[in-house]
Length: 601
Image (tube, rainbow, N blue to C red; front, side):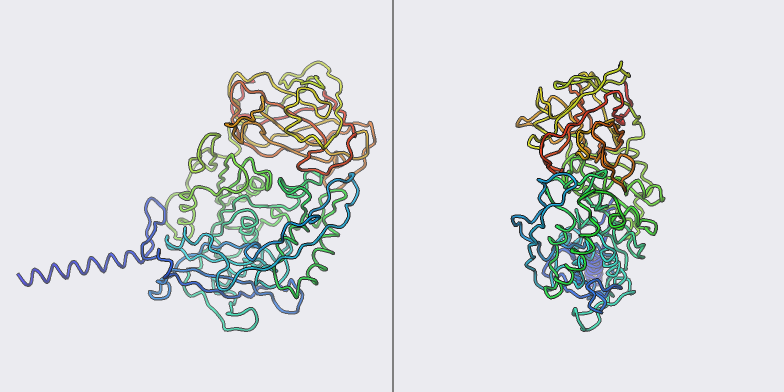
C-alpha cells in the first residue's frame, strides 16, 4: 500500500513538473500561439533598454549614431535559457511631438505657382524616461511567447542622429537593431560609451508591425534585405512621401492636415538631442527638403524618388501582410496596394487585408497571430498555401470578419468604360454606350464650397456631375478606376479634382462611411505629359490628362446611382487659389473606366 501511494505521489509530481515545463514553453493551437500563464505576469517581465550602434552618422558629429532600444521579455529567457522570437515596432513618435501652433502649417490660400510665406517652426518637448520607450504590442505578444522590442527613430527621443522623413537612415536604423538581435551589430548600456549588451535570449527571428509612420518603418527595414526579418505586417503605411504630399503633379495635403508637407512632419517628430537640432535643421529641413520638396510645381524629382519605398524593394525578402482602409484619406489606400502588387510580382509571400473605414485598423488578431506563428516559430499552419490572398471587410461587416477573395483586385473584375452626356449646371449622364456628340461644359472654381456641398447641390456652376441611371442590381467595384479628361483652363494653372460618389447622398443618423464617397483623385493638368515636368497651360487650349483614382472595393447597392463629379479646387485637400478659374471639359474626349466584378451593363 505504501509503495502504491509512493508511486501515485511520484506520478502526480511528474505530471505537475511536466505541466510546469509545458507552461514555460510557447504552445500552439490551430496554428496560433496561445497565451501561456507563465509568460503573463507583467511584474515578472524583464524590461531593459540599450543603445544599438548603426552604420551611419546622420547628425554629422563624427560618430556613428546609436539608436535607443527597449526590450520586454518573459523571465524564463533569463532563468531557463529560453530563446524566443521578437515582435518589433519602431517609431519617431514615442518621445513626443510638436504642439499645434498658429502658422505651423503652410498657408494654402495662395495662387498656384506661388510660394507661401515662411511658416512657424514649433519645437518638440521631449518626454519619456528610461528604460521604457513604449508599451505597445507587449500585452498582446509577450504572453504568447514573444519578446517585444521598440526603438526610437534617428533624431527622436534618446536616439542619436537626425530625422530625415524617409531618408536612408530610417531604413538602416531598424536594420541595425535586427542585426544586433542576430549578433551582427553591437549594443551598449549608454548612448556614449557603456558596457556591451548582447541579445542572448532570442532566436534572431523578427517580425515587425505598426500603424501609419510606425507601419512605414517595417517596410523601410525590409527593403534593406536584412537577414532575420522574416515577416512584416504594415498597417496603413506611408510607402511614398510623394504620394502622401502630392497627387499626379498636384500639391495636395493629406486628409485632415491641410497645409502639411514633409518639412512640417520633420518638425513634428524632431524630439532628439536639443544640442543637435539647429545643425540638423539647417542641413536637412532648410537645405535638403527646401531644395527638393518643390511646392511650386509639385513635380516628381530625385528628392521624392529617394523617399519612395517602391523604388527600393529589390533586396526585400520578408513575407508581407498589408493592411489598409479604403476610406483612409490621410494615408490613402494606394500606398499599400502599390507595394502589395510589386511584392507579388517579386514572388514574395504576400496577402492584403482591406477594410471600409479610415486611417489605421490592423488585421484581425487571429490573422496576425498565424502569420507571426508561421514565420517566427516555423509552425506549419498552411499560411503560405492559402489560395485566397485578399481579405476584405464588406460594408456592413465587422473588422474581424473579412470576406476572403482569391486576390485584389477581384480576378472577376472587368473594365467598364463610361461616357458623359451633358447636363450642366444640373446633372449629366454616365452611360456605357458612346453617345452622339455632346460638346463641352464649363465649371467655375470656388474653393469655398467643399466637395460634399458640391455633390449634394442640385444646381451649381462650381462642379460638373454625371450620374448613371438607378442601378437595377448591386455593382461591385474592385480595383483602380481610371479617368481620362480633355480639359481647357482659363488660366495657365488649375487644380483638377474628381470624386466618385454614390447618390442620393445619405447624411442621416444611420449613414455609413461607405454611403457617399466611393473614391477620389486629384491631378495637375500642367503635368499632362509627365509627372517630372510641368508646362503652363495655354488658356483655352484642350489637354488630355489621364490618371488613376484611389483603389477601392465596394458594393454599390441597387437603387443607388454612381456619380462622377469633376471640380477644380478641393477645399479639404488642395491649394486655394482665388475663385474664378474656368475649366471647360470636352465631354466627347472624357471617360471613366471602372473595374466591375461580373459586369452586366
